[in-house]
Length: 194
Image (tube, rainbow, N blue to C red; front, side, top):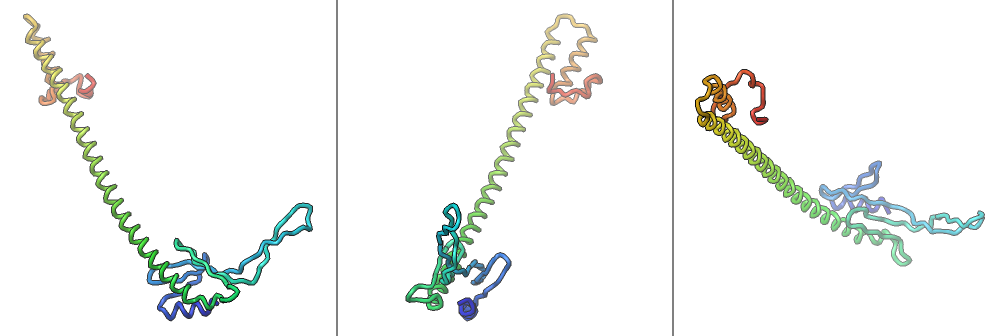
């Protein structure tokens, strides 16, 4: 059976490959795993103290396509496996076509998934950037408000000490996000902590 199948496969322009992990019929770029095996019959054995079963070969050859589109043929009473070769070859071609369609759908799905993932990552990055910018805006506004509060306070103090007035306004300048005021004692401090 196998030599006849290999000849039929080659006549159609396909290939038959033997590998460590199994046998393959290659149609275009699609590798379809196929198996040949002999059927076995389950036989009850009573020669032990408990009921046991053994599997015995029964002489019937089985050909199987082990892909997504599984199919199996075997010797029948009226029809041998060799006589079923046209059906087997037709099913192999159909299985290859189905596999090509499946792989094309998978490729399209993968491309769409990658595109959606990329768009989501870009959206998430933009969202994070917007949140961070908003948080920075709020921090700057709060610092500006506190700086303005200090300036308003220093102006409201009646007859302030000039040294204290300069010191307080320097702190207000240091807090103000738009005034790069420099206070020696606070140059390493985080302005957002105040």
